[in-house]
Amino acid sequence: NAGVTQTPKFQVLKTGQSMTLQCAQDMNHEYMSWYRQDPGMGLRLIHYSVGAGITDQGEVPNGYNVSRSTTEDFPLRLLSAAPSQTSVYFCASSRKGQGRDSPLHFGNGTRLTVT
Amino acid sequence: RKEVEQDPGPFNVPEGATVAFNCTYSNSASQSFFWYRQDCRKEPKLLMSVYSSGNEDGRFTAQLNRASQYISLLIRDSKLSDSATYLCVVNKGGGSYIPTFGRGTSLIVHP
Image (cartoon, rainbow over all chains, first blue to last red; front, side, top):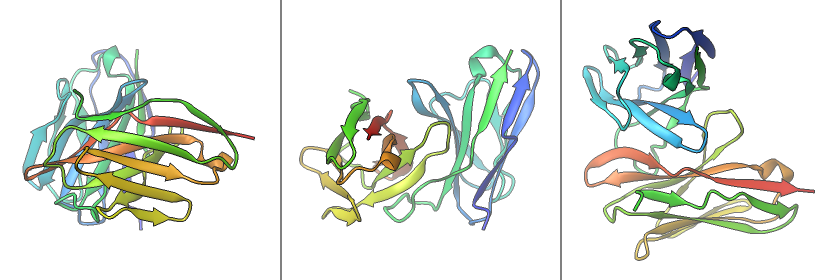
């Protein structure tokens, strides 16, 4: 039972490069989301999706793009990396509804450094 | 007022102590509440959901006070392995199920 799988675990980019962070879940969860976590800032929502074909912006969407062509996959694209995007990125999924029996399941995280 | 507020700590307690954290939320329509634990440089993991009547899981007890809009987490007989950051999570309610995270409370349990 894989749960939420994120790749890569670590990545170093140069300013201006683009890349895609992969996220896949095998729990048939409708809701998927991307967070970034910076020291002292807590988890901040970048983008989220409530089902295939539906995406929406979170708190800090600028510089990121997402798509949800299948229920399982929710990739996050950095269009032109900037040093301000150096962070730890987490993908998370849950059943729709976020009731008390539908908590978020997180991937292991991607540590991204932009030089 | 932030949507979900927590005292960042750190709470520095000896092994065996009882420690309690509170978390306040601003949206009275919020419907579901959770405590997550996050170890350094790891992903958050669900510790426990918070039920209206309060609930207990071993040494951990969670309570919800809707009138005052806060949830609490009590840890009894603290272990060294309890050292972590504890995140309070509240869903926005009002038909939205997007969870909102507090910034976390750091707990350090020392020998």
